[in-house]
Image (cartoon, rainbow, N blue to C red; front, top):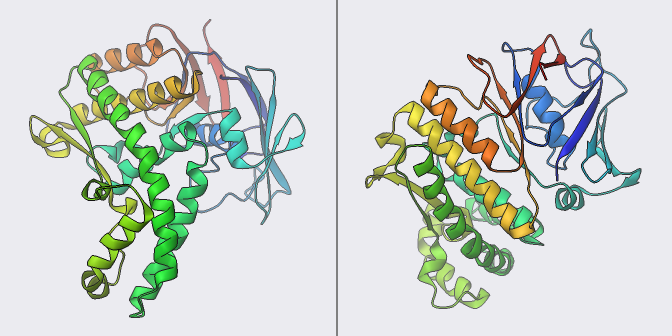
Length: 354
């Protein structure tokens, strides 16, 4: 599955235009502020993931004033037309061939893995970054995971509010228990595959990386809601003191090390970027094997802080994945073999060569 083309209409600072794409590695290069990240965001919006959480998704005209609507219309490899339209103060409208769909329905039809704009912190950032990666992969691989995760997060927020008021509520704890079991069951299948493949891809990129999934479910003799409730109740005093939930999937992590030391400290900045690329490639492979069709990878500043050798290895690895990659880079000293190039300047996307 891949994008054949995308049409943009009043989308942020991008000119109204249509861009044809290759099924392999597509590199968008140009100076900062040219519109590269906005273009990648359009692909994510057109696949049901929404924008990048930036301050405003308000459609804008060229002069900066509000526009009645903006849209990204993508043509998929299966001849399906996917439309994502934004209207002022309204939720995005998603359609496939003219019929309205939800974000989760669209993601199942057009699987996209997006890594931007802060995803490079996967290696040396907080555990929440790696949980977000794991969740993104699980959403695509496991039916119902996204819905369970939404319900669990809502229950965690409600429980945190209660604890901050000094109240211990069983009802939200029971909701957490039910959804936590579903989340842990999915992660227990997906996470080991992700860790194993991350190590293999890191080796191909010339670095040593160890990855392991760590979750509090390991303390339970059986993965059942009742066991979750027992464990949570056993630390009631601790939760009342800290006034926040201390047990559950929201405290999981994918621990990354190199030579037994934290990867964020043991690896140089360039090596951390390679480790990030290994995680990206592993995620794509996990989804590919689960769905039996390739996802689309969206990556921002793919070659930032990477030396020539690293760029060559990363580009080769992305091409050999056999999936569509839509990536941006500010600098492109040389064209990687097998890549389709596009220059982005002042909101205009122009194919280069070929």
